[in-house]
Each structure stands twice: as C-alpha cells, then as structure tokens.
Amino acid sequence: MTTAVQEASQAIVNGAAEAQELNLQYAQNTLENSIEVLKNYAEDTRHVIQELVEQSKPQQEVFQTVVNTALAAQERNVKLVQSMLENGTEVLKVHAKSSRDLVQTLAEQSQKQQEALQTVARGTFNTFVDFLTAPFPYLQETLESARPAVSRRGETEQHTTREGVAAQKAIRQAQNS
Image (cartoon, rainbow, N blue to C red; front, side, top):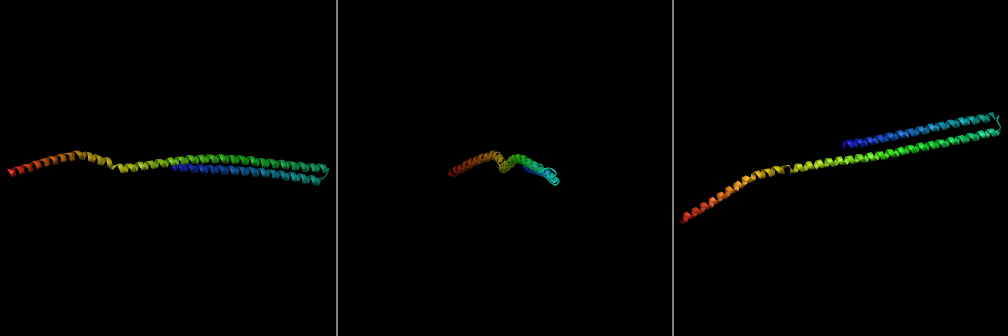
C-alpha cells in the first residue's frame, strides 16, 4: 500500500514538473517573439522617421513607405498572435494529456491500494477466526480421548451398581430367611 501511495505521489510530482516546464517554454517563446516584433517596430519607426527627415523623396514615396511599414507591422502582429495561439494550443493539449495520464495513474494506484487493503483485511479476519477457533480442535481431541475412559467408568459404575443391587437382594433374602 505504501508503494501505491508513493507511486501516486511521484506521478503527481512528475505531472506538475512537466506542466511547469511547458508553461515556462510557452512564456519564453511568447516573450522572445514579442521582443522580436518590438525590435522590428523600432527599426521600422526609425526608418520612417529617417525618410521623413530626409524628405528628399516625393511625398507619395514617403506615404508608400509608411503604408508598407504598417502592413509589415500588421503581418508581424498576425504571426505573433498565430504563434501564441499555436503554442498555447499545444501547451493545452499536452496539459490535457498529462492530466488524463495522471488521472489514470491515480485510478490505478487507488485500485492497488484498495486491493492491498482488502488483502490486509482478509488476512486480519482469517487470523482472528483462526485465533478464535484454535482451542476447538484441542477440546475435541480431549473429549474424544476422554470418551473411552468415560465409557469404561460408566461400565464400571453399572457393574458396581448391579453388584450392589445383587448384594442388597442377597442381604434381604438372608434377612427374610
């Protein structure tokens, strides 16, 4: 039973460690992707500011640069969100599988504990019954060994009683005669 409890505890600890590791990886990936997006924003902003400062280009080209920068930023945002969702979904799938595995392990350990308790209870009950019934074979053996002696004693008493009755008859006959 102790082994079953230890195995169940170990399964819980392993599941928690795996979940913690996955959460850490997810957070790290999200942070790294976000930092990369922010770096790109800063670079694009610096580029647009430089374009505006130089203004040697026609205004239409500057406007086109701003639009292209905004589109690139939007594309990076979409990729970041998509990455976060995909990674988050994967983390959730792994958590769900780990949870199912943990529940199954706990159910198996619970079954083992129940079987161990039944075995202990059965053994305790059998020992108690054996303890209570232990004197009976000795008593039966004693009674069986005493039975012939009791029979002989009964026969002896019957014989003595007959002799006593016969003696009393003899005494009565002697007194009557």
